[in-house]
Image (cartoon, rainbow, N blue to C red):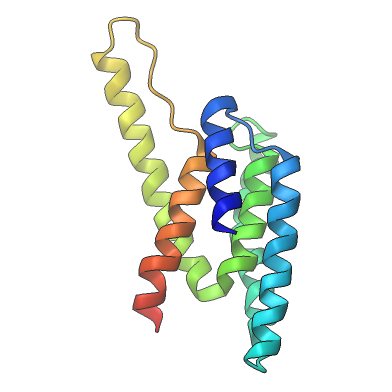
Amino acid sequence: IVMLLFTLALTNIKTFLLPTALIKPLAVAIVVFQVFVSIQTDNLGLLGSAIVGAIILGGIPFLLFQISAGRWIGGGDVRLGFIAGLLLGWKLGLFCLGVMVCLVLLSFLVEHLTSKLSKTHTPARIPSGVLWVVAIMLSVIIGQQLFA
């Protein structure tokens, strides 16, 4: 899962796209992972948490996509949001949502400052897939410590 996330981030840096060819295997790996974890721990509630997390982390980008008609956020971000929610569950999903909002605001600040400092006025853009991967990793590393 980590390897697929980093591959997705690297691809996103080069192309500014979140290709379905990488999103689909990531989704399959996460679903298989969640099923194995729920069986191993004998806790089917983990699957319910994963579904609610997917609704939270995928639903908000979906609403933004629908409201903006695809101008603010792309379909790859919506799919990655659903997948991140499946991986994180609802508690870490809410944490990830907060981290993602902070990262997006920080990226807007960086973009604004670089456009002011640059002579060509071409702002430095941070691809959203990279922000998603950073938010997911921070949620797993920090969020699990907070909610343990």
